[in-house]
Image 1 (cartoon, rainbow, N blue to C red):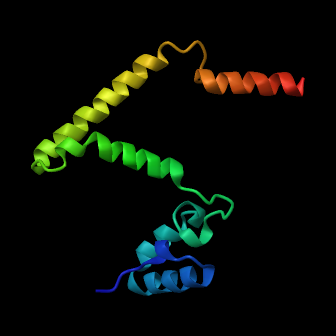
Image 2 (tube, helix red, strand yellow):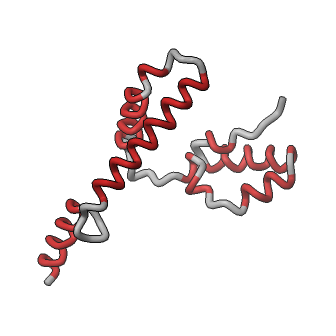
Image 3 (tube, helix red, strand yellow):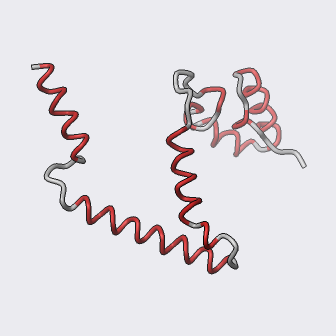
Length: 120
């Protein structure tokens, strides 16, 4: 089975070759993908200054730990556990946000105020 691996491409020439394969395989898919900014979905176009995925990795590890007890359950029980976890997390965060005195979080607000004072 043929398929396009353009999102795995790490160089522009490889990306272009994979996009050509996609165009030969499916014109409409190529047209749709061509309208999207490759900086948002293809490694060959990602910015090079960011070298660490620690934030995403930490989020994944925290999520995996939170569902650890449900991972060996049947799929419906697993999905219910994930649904419950996410709903609880959203409720806890909403409750915390309602206590904010400003439109942004307290740490962000403090940082913005410091920057405002420095530039004045």
